[in-house]
Every structure is written in structure tokens, then in C-alpha cells.
Length: 209
Image 1 (tube, one colour):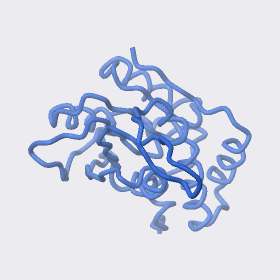
Image 2: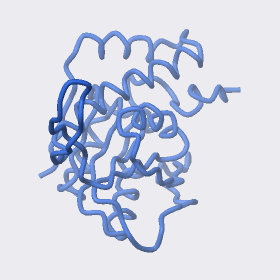
Image 3: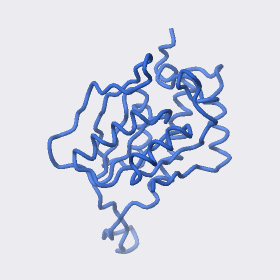
Image 4: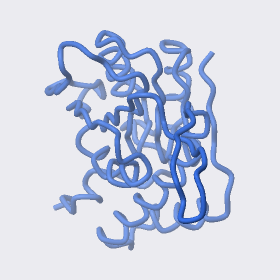
């Protein structure tokens, strides 16, 4: 069964408040996305595999640690792009592969319009990145694409999640763990998270019109 790991930290609460506030500017919004993504990544990478690595400090020789898995960052376009850079700050060797998915506003179902995955050589660990986990439709479509590619270990990173999205992942992809900063109350009739923060992509890229 998929597990859901929710960050419980005062810094998360403070940055979430800035993120939710409709008066927050696009620049401040992007900074809050970055800070929360780094906190989320710190938690989600706690079980990554490492191996000993010999180095020499200015004082003596010693054994440090280095990552052993090929890691892929899979941002769901377009809002997921904002979570890539803070992840790369922590895992500079990670590969970035893009999946283009958008929600049809009439049916609230995901539409897959772009995929940039090679035909072979899948990564060993994939982090699917999307600030908002609402219905779970786009996330599950991404999981299916990654599994067909051959990825064995997939984790979902979302800043805000809805109970409906988590339930769908648990039902359809029980092997995928969800890491999020908070689980909100529910989805409204338009399938937006309540209280949420509105449209993350529009607020990140200042395209609210």
C-alpha cells in the first residue's frame, strides 16, 4: 500500500502561508515553491542508497559516502518545472526528463501531450514533481509512463495534496509513496484543491491574465 508522508515543521507552515496568500507576488511565490521543495526533497531522499567513497581531507584519508542509484527528476509540465532546480541543488547528478500533461478544464481529466523519455536505460529512482496533487489523474498517468519505461522505484513529491488524489494513487499505484507538505480538505466542483492556492502554474509564471 502506498504511504503518505506529510512534513510537520514550523518552517513548512510559514512558507505555506506565503504560498497560499493571494497577495503574494509571482516572485515571492516562486521563492516559496523553491524553499518548500527543498524541505520536501530533504525528507523524500532520506532512504536513498549510498556506498563508501574514498577521499583525502587536508588532514588524512577517509571514507565518505556517495549515491549509487541513477536518479531521475520528472516534472509534470508546467508547474513541476519550478521544483526541479531545488532538487538539482541537492542531487546535482540527477537526470531531468519531462512529461507534458494538462488537465482538460471541461472534463477534469489529464491529457498527455509531450514525453521526453529515451526508449531504453531507465533510471533506478524517479521523483515525480508537481506542486499540486489534486485528482491524481496526471500523477497516475506519469507513473504509468515511467513504469512502461522500466522504472522500478517511483516517489511522488507534491507541496499540497487533496485526499482524493492520495486515494487514487493508493488504489491504482500502491507501490508509489507520496511525500507532501500538507493534505488539504477536499476538491471543489471545479476540481481545485480547497483551501489550496489557486492555479500553481499561473501563479509561478505570472499568467493569470
